[in-house]
Amino acid sequence: MANPEILELLSTNKVFDGELRKYKFKACLNANFNLFLPSHSAAAHVPLLVYLAGLTCTEDNGAQKGGFFGPAAAKGIALLFPDTSPRGAGVEGEDKDWDFGVGAGFYLNATNPAFAKHYNMLTHVTLELPQVLSTAGLPIVCGHGALTLYLASKTNQYRSVSAFSPICNPINCPWGQKAFKGYLQGGTTEAAEQYDATELIKKRTDPVRILIDYGTADNFYKQGQLLPENFVKAAREAGHDESQVQVRSQDGYDHSYFFISTFATDHINFHAEFLL
Ligand SMILES: N[C@@H](CCC(=O)N[C@@H](CSC=O)C(=O)NCC(=O)O)C(=O)O
Image: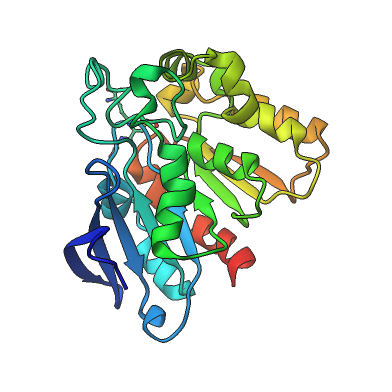
């Protein structure tokens, strides 16, 4: 399946009767990815669910701790786990902070000249990886990047989106403001057009398929980094009811992969409705 000029297979593991493959993507500065193929994929095309991990993560966090393989294997869904930023770009200061630069690419295409050559995770996730995997009809799962990629897509590339503890209104929270100031020449004004889920949902008048879970004990939620209430308000005002935009507050859960793995099956089943 893989073109060795572009993809180098680094490892394989059997899991839930399927196979987890780890690849180095040679076009993109050591940005590795993991691909789970359910056993069905040997005989038939299967849909692909993309998992976008959060700040500080690599392609391994969701794969190793998310608990997605069992439910995905049961439904016959493949899973793609991209990295969260380029690695080794050499931009000055890129590894200074945990919430900006290496491990924190924010799934955007940088327009700040210092970052624009390498920090193009939007293109990496929406074009480069799908092209290399030659798959259509991708749903996506996980936070801020998933929501914005889904909501800004004009090509029906994605059928549904779900997110765990996402940053819902980044132009109004410290993480988003810091990232957009650093990556984009136009800062939060430029970001509002393309990279803010609350702004984007206001402009979507067609039916959408969105599931969001967040935990009430999540410190980042309590600090005002996530702002799911802003997203719900904007969605309802734009005419998207519970059947299109479901945002669930999960009592006592924090921001960790213990939370994600608890609700992983719900998210896989949600996407299966639109994929199979
Ligand atoms: N180092 C930080 C905490 C970092 C953190 O919690 N990262 C989350 C994502 S946060 C938003 O996107 C994460 O997924 N971490 C990786 C993991 O495997 O848990 C701090 O000190 O607060």
